Each structure stands twice: as C-alpha cells, then as structure tokens.
Image (tube, rainbow, N blue to C red; front, side):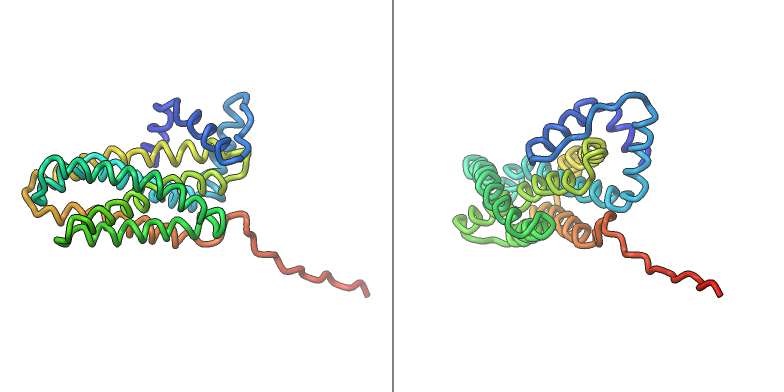
Length: 246
C-alpha cells in the first residue's frame, strides 16, 4: 500500500483529475487545505474507518482499468490471432469504442434509477459473459454484438466505479480518496497491456486472452459485491439504563 501512496504522490495530476470528476458528478470537492496536519488527518481517515472500502475500491479500479486498457490495446491483435484479416480486426476495435459510448450512456441511465452499486455488477457481468463467448467460434455478426457489449461492460463499468467512489467519501476527503483510488488503480492500466503481451508471446490460443480478461471481470464483480455496509452506516448502540438512586 505504501507503493500506492508513492504513485499518487508522484502523479500531481491525480488530485486535479479527482476534483474535476467530483464536480462532474455534482459533488462538492474538498476545499483547499493548509498545512501538512490536515493532509495527515485526511489520509488517516481514508485508511481508518474507510480503510476496507478504500482497499476494495483500489482493487476494483485496478481490475477495471486492466480490462479497459488491455482490451483497448490488444483486441485487434487478438482477433488477428483468431484468424481475422487486419481490416476486420481493426473494425472490432471501432465497434468496441462504439459500444463504450452507447453503453456508457445506457448504464449511466440505469445507475440513476437503481444506483451505481447495483449497476456496476450488471455491467461487469455483461462484460464477463461477452469475453467468455468471444472465445468461442461464432458468426462475425454475433462477434460484433459481443464486442459492443464488451465495450459497454468492461469500459462502462469503470466510469460508474469512478462516480461511485466519489460518492462514497464525505466531501472533506472526497478528492483525496478518489485521487488515491484512481492513482493506484492506474497500475492496472499498465499491467493489463503488459500481461496480455506476455500471454500472446507464449503462443497459446487466442481464447486464453479472453479468459484472462474474463477472470478479472469476475474478480471485480465479486469485490463489488463484497463491499458490505457503508462505513457511515453505524449500528445504533443500545442504551444502558443507569442505576436508580435508592
């Protein structure tokens, strides 16, 4: 976790990006701080009562960015490995991004109705199922449909995660919490393309690439479902009656 703090400290744009995202979602970013004491207090709060959710958010973001960057980088090469010509392989990437645009609008509308916490597992489930089915030889038209759903599930879910993370922290630590989650989670965007490149170089079948991505979609799904109660939802403490004076 100390390495994660170093990543955020080495990326000054993370805090600015976090504040912009909070404003975009209609949330109040934390006010400017003065002095190191306030910063330490906020950091201790992120890893205090919000520690469990912060760790899970980092892992979910890691998996989501691994999916987004890994699929976006290697999909044409994977489809060429599956036997499609270069033109068709590139067209799959265009369809993927089209699915991302349309899917993001749809899943955002769904999230407004049922909440991001319920919408994120739906998007991840769609992405995982699409990835598994893409490993099966199917007509090209069906593959285009699956790639569209993949763009909706793999990339659309990460946008919801960012908004959900921002809404889960109080305003006083919102930018700090979101900046940390996005900064450390960005390591997934580095690990995804690198890991798939190694996987392709092994000469295994193209199916392994889709199974690899599907595994991380399922992991992100399970992590989201394991969040449990929000730290601010405290269980009322029963009142102990005092002794009656005799």
